[in-house]
Length: 581
Image (cartoon, rainbow, N blue to C red; front, side, top):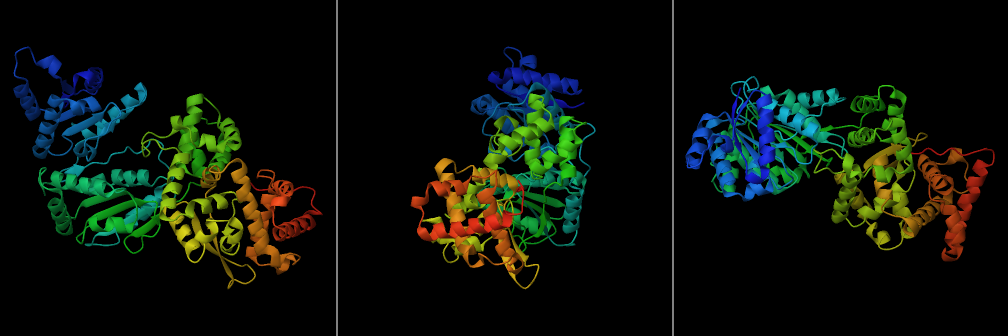
C-alpha cells in the first residue's frame, strides 16, 4: 500500500474524490486536505508534513488547477520533493482538456480528459500499476522514465520490427547507437517505440521520451532529463543546462535510452544528439533519409492476416474472419485506419462487413470520423486529417507538392511513371507547368516523400532491364484523402489535364503493337484507359466530348487516337474489369 497526497482545486473536487475512491480500491491510502485539515489548522504545515511522509503526490491537473495559487504551490513543492524522493514521486493526472505545464509534460502522466467512466478507470488503474508501490518499483539502478503513452491492449504483428531494433541497438558496443523508425503516417512508429521501451525498461537506468516535432519540445524534455538525473538544477538557465546535459551524455550515457518521437528530419535532431559515449537513441519519423545519421528501420504496413487478427480481436467479431481480411485490404494495412474502423464498429454495434460496405461508398467520410480517432494519436487526429496536414506541410516546402499529389491521386492505384509529369507538364496549365520545370518535379517529389506521402521506386523493363523508369506510388488511403481535395468542375479539370498529358506522351506509341512497347508506355496507357473507361472514376471521356469546343484541335486528335487504340484493344473483350484500390 502507498500513501498518496492528492493535490487539487475546489472546481475539481468531484474528480479528486473519484480518484481517491479508486486509490482505495487499489489498496492505497489517499490524503485529501478536506478530510484531514480542520478549521484553524496551518494548511501549509500540513501540506509540507504530508509531502515529506507520502510515497507519491497525485496532482489533479486542469486549467483551473493551474490558476489556483494553493494548487500551484503544492505542485512546486511536490516537484522539489521529487528530486529527493526519486522516480515517479509526482503522479500528474489530467482530468480536463488543458495545456499541460512544461515540467509536468516532461513526466509520465495520465490523461483522463474526455474518457468514459470505464476507460477512465482502466487508464488510471494501468497508470497506477506502473507508477505506484509496492510491487511495481523499478529494479535498483533505474532512476528515470517518462514514457507518455500506454502500449495498446491489442499490440500485434511487430515482433520482426522489435528484433530489428534490438539488432540495430546492439551493433555498436561502447559507442552511441542511433536507430530511426520511419514509415507512413499512422503505421504505428510511436507505439512501437513505446513497446520497445516497455520491453527493455529494466535494461536502462533511464528511459526518456523527447517531443522531437519541435525544437522547443526537445529542449524542454532534455532539460527535464538533466533535472531528473541531477545533472542540472530546475532553476538553471536553459542554454547552459542543455550544453551540460549533452556533454554529460557523451561521457555518462551508458544505460540511457533516449526516444526522439516524431522527428522532422536528421538535421533538426543533430544538435541534440549525444556527441559520443554509449547512450542508445531511438527516433521515430515520417522522414525517410536517415542513413547519414542513424540505422534506419522501415516500419511496414500490416499484411491482411495481421490486420484481420487485429479487427477480430478489437471488435470481438470472431465469426467474420473473411470480412476482416477483406476490410484490412481495403484499409491498406494501415494500423491507424484499422483502429478507427474497429472503434466505429464497436460504437455503432456494426459488423465488419457492413463497415466495409459503407467504406466502399464513402471512404473520405469514414476516414474523418472524429469520434473514432484514437485518443492517444496526436490529439485525436483522424486518418484524413493526418494526411491532409501532411499535404499542407509538404506544400509549404514546395508549391507543386499539393497539385502533384492530387493529380497522381486521381489516377489508378498503380506505379505512375514520373515522365508523365515531366513530358506532359504543359497540359497541366499554369502555375503547375512552370513549377515542374527543371528540377521542380524532383523537388516536389522530395517534399512529398519527406512527409511519407509517396514512395519513389525505379522499375526495370522486363524485356530490357537496362531500361528503367522512375515511378511514384501512393498508399490507397493517401489517394482517397488527396483526391477529395478536388470536387466538381475542379476535379474534372484535373482529369482532363491528366488525359491530355497521357495522350501527348503516348502519341508516338499510337498504333504500335503491344509487344513492341516499353513497360512504361504500357503502364501509362493502362492508367489512361482506366481514367477514360473505368466505371469507378470520373467519366473524363464523356466530359471531354461535351467540352469539345474548349479543347485544342491538337489535344482533340490525341485523345481521339487514344480512344481509337482503346476500342481496338477492347474489341474482343466482352467487359472491362478495373482493379480498385
